Image (tube, rainbow, N blue to C red; front, side, top):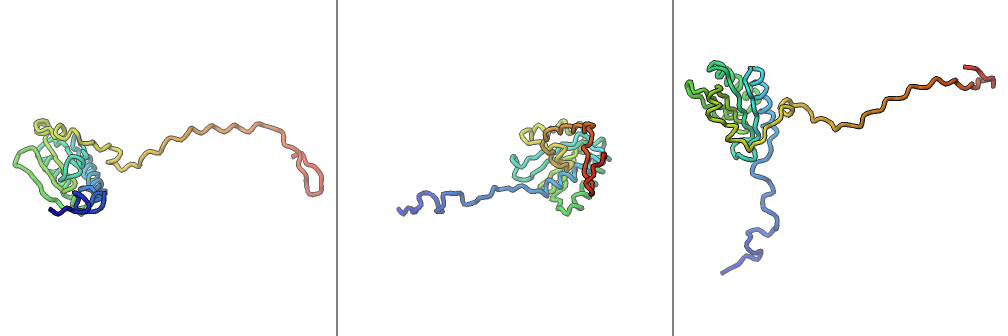
Length: 178
């Protein structure tokens, strides 16, 4: 039998051949998640949660879960989400909407949005299914910059004590009082 000179590896380097993870962080995905969160909030969706599932899922980075108040509200939220995704120049991979199902899904590849009616959301419990995912904080979703570290509090300046001014010399060598 022939044996490769580098042992059981097919390549000669001790490092892995690929230095990149399978899925790299996509800042555009976070931007799209922010835009979707914003429109859902503006259109009065309830209990909006954005989950970072990039560590658990190979098909999407963010899941957005929201609650609509009625079937017409559900359809209106879906329409607004479609507009936001189109405006962001992202491609909608698929939309799943069952007639009177109480659940609409918009798949924009890196961001997947699930909008439910309240009782349907409770029944399927996606938050429980994805409980290992990290919830994205609202400060990140609102695009607020990271808070700077707190500096030591500044000490108030002491008021200048009223002290008499020393006489100063004038051009002719005379001293003035003032």
